[in-house]
Length: 64
Image (cartoon, rainbow, N blue to C red; front, side, top):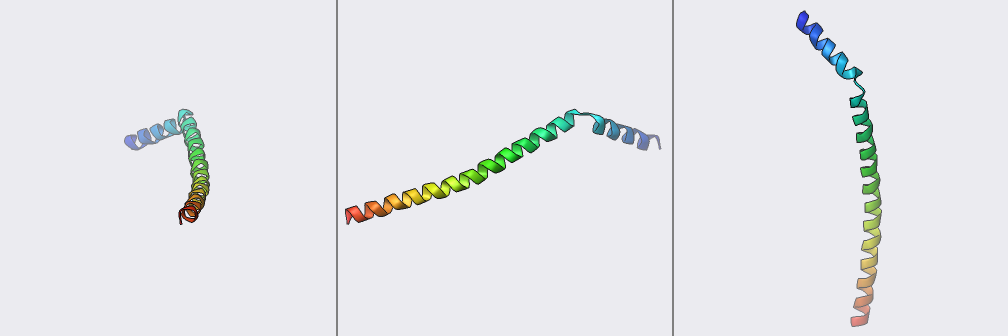
């Protein structure tokens, strides 16, 4: 019984600390930044791919 109360006390102390809350907030911000970067890189990659395809088509027409 004493061990169970000690474990419960330790869990309550961990939940009461605010340092963990700051860590979670920073993790959420980093996650949102990573999500935005991934979405923008996908759009940028599509645009760059289209530009290279256009240049390739023009080079093919000029060299033929």
